[in-house]
Length: 97
Image 1: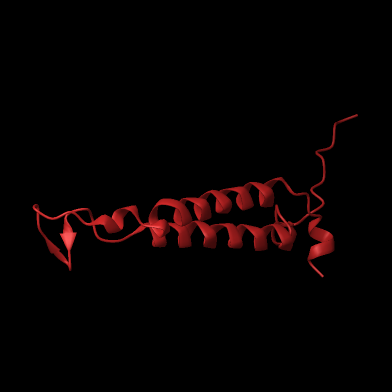
Image 2: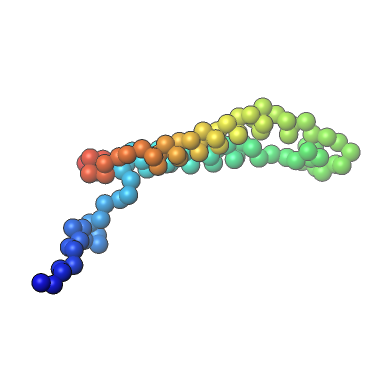
């Protein structure tokens, strides 16, 4: 007897997503945290005072709480949420309702 090729139980348009709705929600939250952390990290450089570059002045704002502590913490939390969203098992059939 000839071996019959295995039948694909899903048609091309009926294939389920790799992750469920819960996973994609957590992925969006993680990406938002990462983006917020990167936005909070931006600002003028060390030699910019009042929007003008001056090599004789030093801008202490580069050592602010927002840039040194808050932004990196948000970025790390965003990556942890991303890892959680990928590792969490979510049955796509249950979440599609």
